[in-house]
Image (cartoon, rainbow, N blue to C red):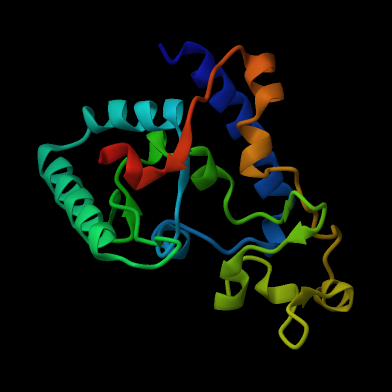
Amino acid sequence: MFENYLKYLDFLNTKISKFFNEQSPYIFCKKGCSYCCQHAEFPYSKIEAEYLKSGLRTIDKEIYNTVKSNIHAVLSEKETNKADKFLYTCPFLINNICSIYTYRGIICRTFGLLSIAANGNVKVPFCSSLGLNYSNILDKNTNTLSSEMVKQCGYNSKPLGYNINYDFLTGKKTEELFNIEFGEKKSLIDWFE
C-alpha cells in the first residue's frame, strides 16, 4: 500500500538531509526542541495520515495510550474552540519528543529550513524569533536575514531558501512523478474525528 509513498519519502529525506547539512551553520534544532510541534495546524494528506496510523501499531502500549488520550484531549478542545483557525499541540508529542518520528508527516520533515513561499518570497521559520534556526543572522529590528551578519559570523555559505512548500511537495507533479496519490488534505487532528 505504501510502496511508492515510501520511495518518495526516501527521496524527500535524502533531499531534506542535504538541505539541512548545507544550512548547518544556521540550524539549531535538536531532539527535544519541539516548538514546531506546538500551536500549529499540521496539514496532512490522506496517505500521510494512513502511514502515521500504521506507525501507531509499532509503538509501546503505554505510549499508544498517552497518544490516544492526547488525541481525545485535542478533539475535545477543538469542539469548544471558536477561533477561525484551530491551533494545537501535536498529540504525538510526548515529553517534547515525537512518539512516531519515522512515520511523521511531510510538514514535520521540512520544518526549520528557509522555504520559498507560494508568492516566491523566502519564508523564515518562526523558530528564528525564539533563538533557534537562522537566529544568528536574523536582524531583530527588521525581522529579516542580514547579509552583514552572515559576513560577521564568517560563514562560507549564504542561507538558501528551498522549494519545500507543502502544496508543492504534495502536488500533482509529485504525484505523477512518484505514481502516488496524496488524497484529501486536512489538519492532522481531523483524521482522528
